[in-house]
Length: 120
Figure 1: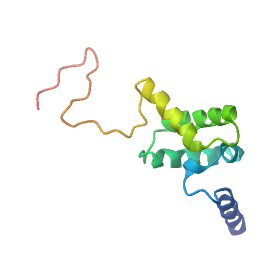
Figure 2 (figure 1 turned 90 degrees about the vertical axis):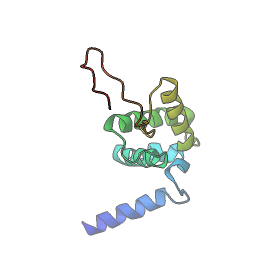
Figure 3 (figure 1 turned 60 degrees about the horizontal axis):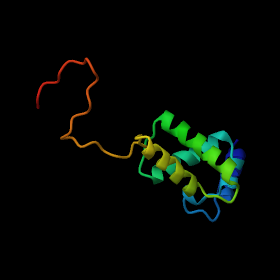
Figure 4 (figure 1 turned 45 degrees about the horizontal axis):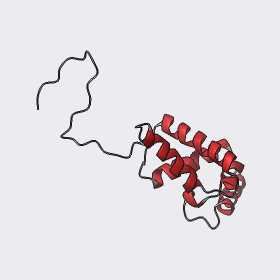
């Protein structure tokens, strides 16, 4: 069991050799990973972008977007390029990766028909 874990670490290190961050990984390397390893890499990319605790939905959306981008753009494209397209798409539809902090002086929007909030 310990030998298997050690071998996994060696394999992971070999895949990431020369990459100081997940964003420098090539699409070819990303697509060659298992789904679980792609998820881990996607989580690392989101952390690099400032989101230390992405929701499951954001993680799944980002992983799918990266996989799709890499399939279309080819093995030599980078995950930095793929992530840039993903965040630009989110920005264009008014969505977010969850990294922006809401101003505490600005109240959150209220659902229609919800009871009024008392003033602060």
